[in-house]
Image (tube, rainbow, N blue to C red):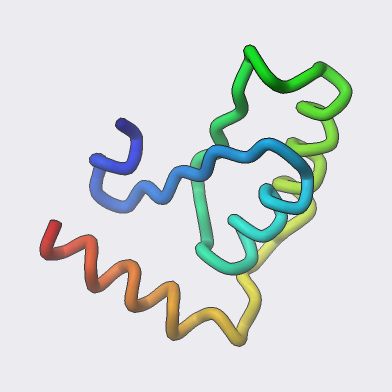
Length: 74
């Protein structure tokens, strides 16, 4: 439901790789973690990976801008 809010790019992450990638490649700004399927240890790894990415990958800026343009229509 978070992605229905303008400007929100939420990502459901099950491991540190997807968390890092969501921030780097999609400039995701909301992190979702399953409380049912994620251990406390893995949740900490996911959060650490998420917070370790300060800025999106420069090579993905055009794709991120495409996502922002699509948001205007949906």
